[in-house]
Every structure is written in structure tokens, then in C-alpha cells.
Length: 269
Image (cartoon, rainbow, N blue to C red; front, side, top):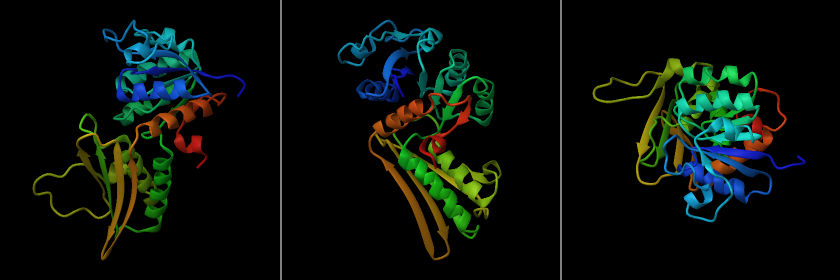
């Protein structure tokens, strides 16, 4: 790569937005060219560095995403599903790589990205960390090796501010387990238990969500059989791992053909 790609961060004021901005500005492989917030936000019109409580970075927060995207080679987007769909269309107009870390997207939301992917490179993942994406591969392999005498439960824990459950990472792991078993997750997912639910259905993949404190992200995949259990675990202690993964994806996407990719492509799994 002969130049440093310019990157725009959406949702600049959020925890991930600020971490992404720090990661990009500290990198010698890319530079920050834009920061986007929703109309009416206090940060709009301010230098993003000053708004974050640090030195000025020479980038003014804007509520006009297309203007920002027009200057960028990549957009990194950890926002909300409705905003991400809007950004996808604008990123496609700008022919910029769109890295999506937004969680809580429905199957309909994901399908709605396809028109944009005909014109731009979209890299979407429920989790951008190397460790989690390795865990996904391991989950698929273990599920493939074990039959449905082993119950599968995906257990995830996050901070008390998280608004969606199960987490995007938990759903990635559930999808991997279902693929390993050769079934569709939509047919076997058990995402809620309360009251007298009856015995567990054989072959179901269960989800348990924990919310509390400042937990960055913890994910276990439990394979429970008669007399034995196998637990695959990933624990994140620093949100920077997600920002570093997103930056890696934005750099990897430069020059790639339009289409939909994920972190398995980025990491070469």
C-alpha cells in the first residue's frame, strides 16, 4: 500500500467510536479524515479531538455523512442497524470500503446490504477480534465432530449499557455451531427460557445473555454431554482489540472487488 487510506468513523462519540478514533490516529497505516454524529448531537461542529477531551485533531464532527464519506477510502461503522443501512448506501455512492461492526442486525437488515455490496466492499462481523474469529472456527469444528447427544449453549456477558441480546458475537458462534451440525440456526435456536419451559429439545442451540458492570465481552460455547463437558472460551478485557481488528479490515479491503466479506476473509481462515 503506497498511501495511507483516509478513514471516517461514524458514531464518533460512542465508546467504540472514540476507541476507533484513537486507534486510527495512533496508526502509521491510515489517517482520520472524518467523524460523523447524528443531527443535533453536542459534538457536531466541534473538533473531534477536543470533544474527546484531548488535543485538536483537525477533524470537525459532522452530521452530513455523504460529505465526509466523499473524502474517505473506508468507513468504520459501529452504530445501530437503521443508521448502518443508511451509511451503506452512502458508502456505496462514495465507493468506499464499509467496515460494519454494528450488532443487533436482523436477517432483513443484512439482506438489505446487498444492493450496496454490488458497488462497494462491505466487511461485516459481529466481532472484529482475532481471538473471537478463531473461536468461531473452533466452534464449527467441535460441533462437526460431536453429535446431538451434546447440548450446545452459547453464554455471553457484556456491560450493562449493551442494548441487544444475544450479542452479535454469540450469534456468530451459534451460526458456526449450526453450520458444523449441518442445520439452520433459525430452526434450532433457543433464545429465551422463563417459567415452566419443559425439557430441553434435543439438537437445540441455546443462548444465555448476562449484562452487568463494565464487562467488555466474554463468550463461552458449552458442549454438554452425559458425564463430560467441553467449554470453548474467549474473554476480552480491552475494547481496543475490536478497534484494531476493524482497522485491519479497513486496510485489507483496499482494492478488493465489491461484495460482502467477513473477518474470516480478512484473517485468511
